[in-house]
Amino acid sequence: MKTKLIPIIIPAVALATCWAIAKDVKPATLPVVETVAPIEASTATATDPALPLVQIAVLLDTSGSMNGLIEQAKTQLWKLVNEFITAKQDGRTPVVQVALYEYGKSSLSGGENWIRQIQPLTRDLDKISEELFALTTNGGNEYCGAVIQRATKDLAWDPNPKVYKAMFVAGNEPFTQGPVDSKKSCQEAIARGIIVNTIHCGGEAQGIAGHWNQGALLADGKYLVIDQNQAIVHVEAPQDAEIVKLNEELNKTYISYGAAAPAAKSRQLAQDSNAAARPESGSQVQRVISKASANYSNSAWDLVDACKQKDFDISKVSEADLPEEMKKMTSDERKAHIAKKAVEREEIQKKVLNLNRERETYVTAKRKESAQTDTLDTAMTKALRAQAEKKGIAWEK
Image (cartoon, rainbow, N blue to C red):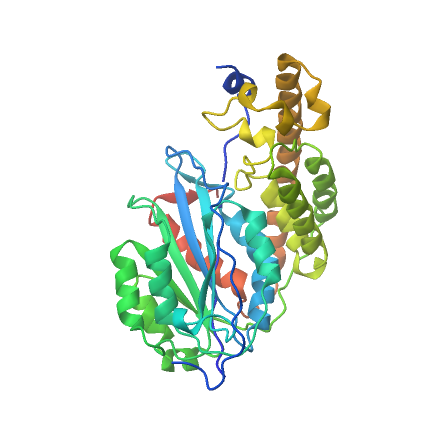
């Protein structure tokens, strides 16, 4: 049995003109193959082409001993997304899209090299989180070359050379195993401007012996080493409690509409609960910070976010798709109601982000006091910042 792999990685626009917009090799024994439902087209991928873009593919090894790696991914998604909160390219905050793959699990299809695309590039962070929490592991064959090739060909990578495009692949079996040449896959990726970062779960020398470093070298990436079984270290800060408390107020500003709303709102609350269930990882705090940023957008089911879209017109939403409290409102009353919630949300988001600035100062000072082995979040952060800066993305000092 072998084990392997992982990666990760999202924005929106400040609310403002809701009113104006509305107006104008097979394993020895193969277990039963999991049936995979077709992937629905994401309703959260619409992006203003004028905004800078970041695209990140997270490739997760879900074979036997990767439970620790998956747990790290579940709890640190929000922290990784938050890396771009204070980032700017040409003076604007980039939109971040994330794609998610799993590979190396025996219950996947051997004909597909035991690879499954879980989500294409999307801004629907709640859906990515939901899928991460649903992942399970079992033994299998892990083929890095195959999954890199698949992600390179399948995903809608933006051809703009200014877009930061990256994959993160982590695991602990030889990087070169499988029917697809991993070197060629990495070369094909970088030829399209997609950086390949490799994360070896284990010792550095062992990873080099397994050629994990070569994959990164071929595709302008970074070779990283982590302990996948190490617990994520969360530095508790004085601001944490207030940040978490503001999440309840933030949720009250969402105005559901359309057929997708019940499931989407339920998903939002479920991911709040998933994050809250792991307080030791800090994921609850990081999720609220994400929800207070431009990274978190739900225009497919929330009228406040929908009104930020250039071509959205509230007057064209049918009464049947509106929440009960808005059905009896006049057109002007509906616009005023959405605008009021938009202002409330913006005020709450500002409070959260201001608290986060104070929190970051506190956490940075505390982290300097203790050195620790890298985990998924710290390893990816190091690579993300260094590589994105070469694309003209800068962070507030």
